[in-house]
Image 1 (cartoon, protein in one colour):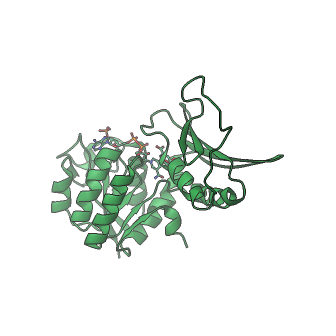
Image 2: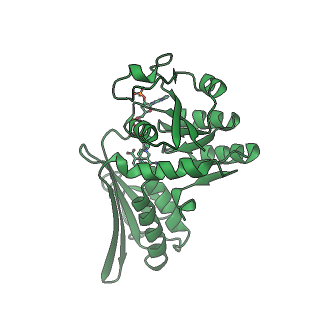
Image 3: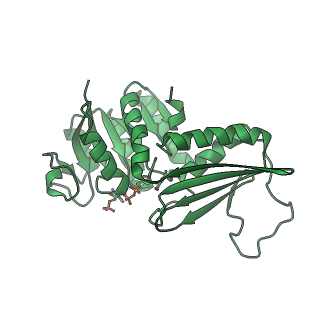
Length: 265
Ligand SMILES: NC(=O)C1=CN([C@@H]2O[C@H](COP(=O)(O)OP(=O)(O)OC[C@H]3O[C@@H](n4cnc5c(N)ncnc54)[C@H](OP(=O)(O)O)[C@@H]3O)[C@@H](O)[C@H]2O)C=CC1
Ligand SMILES: O=C(O)C1=N[C@H](C(=O)O)C[C@H](O)C1
């Protein structure tokens, strides 16, 4: 059956890619968009978007009230993304969320809402299959090589640091890794921030440079040896197979799933 889809953030880098992916897939139908600066217009009126006669809403609630849709894709910013996702769940529209930067409390609130309404939801910190494999390999390696640091590198327009992927990688590593502080117990920063952020002893370093897209290395060290697990997204097409898979699967779910790895066969 054709999936009717609403997208929030259609002019953004990811949202635009997703609009074109949905438009090019015959099993999907784009039925509306949510865009804070183009409410009342139609998609055909906005440069860079397909010339479809599709309404654009500024007010997300009006969109969910008036439009019959199966799936809602959010690719915006954490504050708006959280509110959009809550509303979609309230209206029984299944969210697929790529937006990063939600707090643990926000994730928990969405998990509860999804469960209460029995409406499936997928939040995927990274839609690229290669990135999911990187996280899973890092989880395996962390059991044997608990001394590890994460370096994530992104384009300089990224708002959140560390990236959602780095946070999820550290969380997955914590599932197998013995809890320990990495580095010398008496180390001191002579320049604040030199050792990066830290979660359960794993240090995370965020690099922002023009020209980058999305890249991450997980570095492991043991006596006399090192292991580096690295993933690169060279463009945003790398994320679209994952978005597609989530759209296909989310309507079969009745709870929130956090991470693409949980829906891959
Ligand atoms: N899960 C994954 O695999 C991936 C996730 N991401 C995440 O997706 C999100 C979007 O990334 P990206 O496309 O690069 O970012 P962009 O800045 O290119 O796009 C963000 C979009 O959100 C809109 N927006 C910003 N603020 C608001 C608001 N308050 N209300 C409604 N809409 C708003 C922007 O509209 P306006 O022009 O009006 O500001 C824009 O259309 C980020 O959180 C990023 O981390 C990115 C890549 C992959
Ligand atoms: O903002 C981005 O670009 C990306 N954001 C996601 C994240 O925070 O991990 C996914 C990917 O790294 C690209």
